[in-house]
Length: 282
Image (cartoon, rainbow, N blue to C red; front, side, top):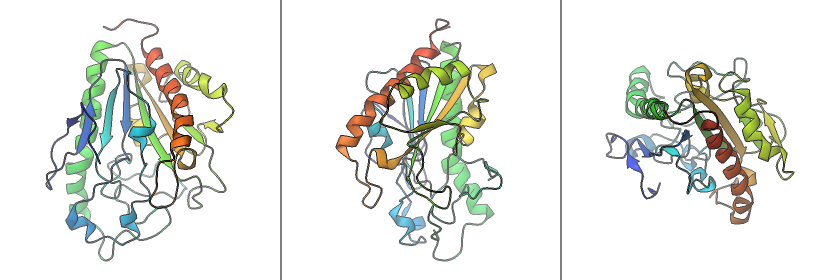
């Protein structure tokens, strides 16, 4: 993926690629984009099926869709595909939605139940190596940046940005709501923050939305969200149809993006404003 100006490379992986891209800001907002990466090491790609190599399950174009210019936000963006390892899954691969179908820490099939591997699937040793090489640096960066921001602010907001195809029978019936906000049923953030980010959503009629519906927040939201400790986490899972074409080559739709971007900007700006609304930076 192209590297935007001003971003810092994370630790290099064995193939010589940065494990993530980071732009440090000083406001109380951190935006995490863990599924936008598209890179797959060559030796791993050689083991994957043609269907997997379409990387259709990517959270396409999110660094472009979110209009963060001018906000003093910290932005953390994954570089590698979720097929390498899923950064929004627990390290022990626990199912975050018990009783529901899901893909794992090391996905073995796509969202459409297509096999990822042509032959043998990764064993425990390979899983551990990928966890150490790709998963751990991202989560260490998240932890370090949140700690840095907490030294400046009494409370900070972690915004975990995601997108998904609007129709995926494997996970939900019919067409998914356009904007799916998740706060782990209210446990990952203050209700005042929920209300603040939903004000601009309630004031528009273009996009359907829900709070804590089918998607309540993944591992990042649930693990790092600690309102008592001053970290308030929100996940937004958007349907891709509201800003892009959902079939290959998964192109950004400029007019849809232009309509959506201002609303996203209002939401994240509300989160940033809320993080500093009660107390001044420490």
